[in-house]
Length: 304
Ligand SMILES: Cc1cc2nc3c(=O)[nH]c(=O)nc-3n(C[C@H](O)[C@H](O)[C@H](O)COP(=O)(O)OP(=O)(O)OC[C@H]3O[C@@H](n4cnc5c(N)ncnc54)[C@H](O)[C@@H]3O)c2cc1C
Image (cartoon, rainbow, N blue to C red; front, side, top):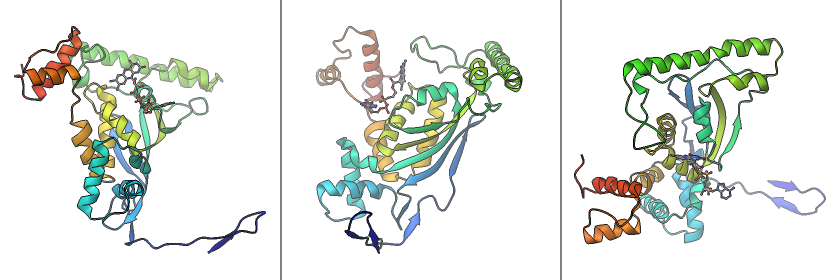
């Protein structure tokens, strides 16, 4: 096949090379893979790159292919590919993981979207509440998931609150949702949608397309699947993990082993392990508490 470049007499020859094996669709021909979350939440895997891969392979092969540019072709046995991916993950050689792209369609309450949007390396296109009317969709946790403020973690809570207070809380959300009828009425009477929306609560749902490379998606998952993340965004992150696991299974296994289920030790903590000390030489109470949690995880102390 040849193409002619405008205002040039260079003729470009394009060679179409056959794949080493028949190409198959990693998403099995589906338009998308959807997971429903909470009452109206959604995370749908819409597309991946690479999507067509040689039969018997996954998108992990794009990572191996890119890495072999730096390390040389070598042999291509499956167990060696796995070893290479695990090496790259352990040594934070990150750019090969950027060769895989993932595109999601997500619907989430605005308070979740505000946390999510802080991950700046994604490409995002969001529903415009200036252009269109916000749909009547609000997040309400189940009564068993109305949590009390933690006394140790100022950013959140995990324990359920008593039923009476939980019921009051749900009534408070319901009242806030009642603003929706006034919102609709005011838009119908001609108030600009960009102004009418501003009294809607943060529990109202928005939606967006979110496209990100695998490396930065894993950074997102590492922070948002963590126990310190708010439970609502954690639910979305866990669903995202489940959606991409069949796309890059070897990478996600390495991610679990070397990131998600791993632990970082500080210099003071290493010193404490070396000397067998129960405490670290830091005055900071929070740092001490973090060390005690790690000791328990390591089996160096009994859990309470
Ligand atoms: C449990 C938890 C609590 C949090 N609490 C708060 C809070 O109280 N207040 C608050 O404001 N935020 C809070 N955050 C948000 C947090 O500070 C980060 O903004 C968010 O997690 C995104 O992380 P990131 O910057 O690594 O991600 P990304 O924005 O995706 O960045 C990924 C990597 O790219 C780099 N990068 C991104 N953009 C650029 C750029 N323009 N130039 C150079 N490098 C770039 C980053 O340094 C990072 O290494 C919290 C996050 C978590 C998980």
